[in-house]
Amino acid sequence: MKVPIISPEQLDKIHQANAANLIKKVKSGKTLNGEERRILEGMAGHDTETVTTSRLAEIFGINRKTLAQWRKEGKSVPDKVGGKEPLAEWRRWFEANPDAGHFDGKPSKSREELLAVKVAVEIDLLEIKRDRERGKLLPRAEVDELLIRIAMAMQSYLRRYEREIPALCLGLTLSQSTPLVKARTRELQDVLANTSSDFWNEHPEKD
Image (tube, rainbow, N blue to C red):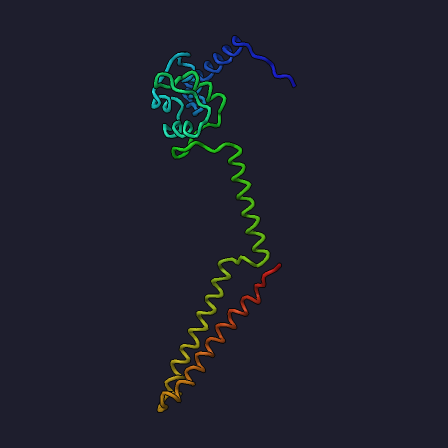
């Protein structure tokens, strides 16, 4: 498809029409968005007009740090003229880069960068889903259930031992009572191990 060629006169008429529409919008009491404000204020400048970086940032609704970052990264932004910013060149640059902007003083990500982030997040979510299906990841509620079962088993047996062990060891020597206490300790260890084993048997890991 052949792209139509616009003459300078036609382009000037387009700019004038845009300016007229924007002025009409302001007069009606409506607020211009950032892009409309950039276009209108850019049209107000002369081709040779230069402004400070602070004024440029104010006109186009961006952050000075953004401008510095763009230049640091080697973006094809207009060069300063006599230490100031060429307003007309910046206007044309913003018209050619409508997605330019900032967030917390940093340039906004390009469409390609945002798409890459989106794909990376989707991959992470798929990996999480796959790991859950394979039993490598468990919901927190189910892990909490295991911990509660272990805690309740410990509490039950320890309370029982508080009653049993003193009575069993009463009147016995240390060498006689030690095996009894060890037997109760191993009993509790077996209970906790079985509780954990039962839980993992209920949640097998799949290949």
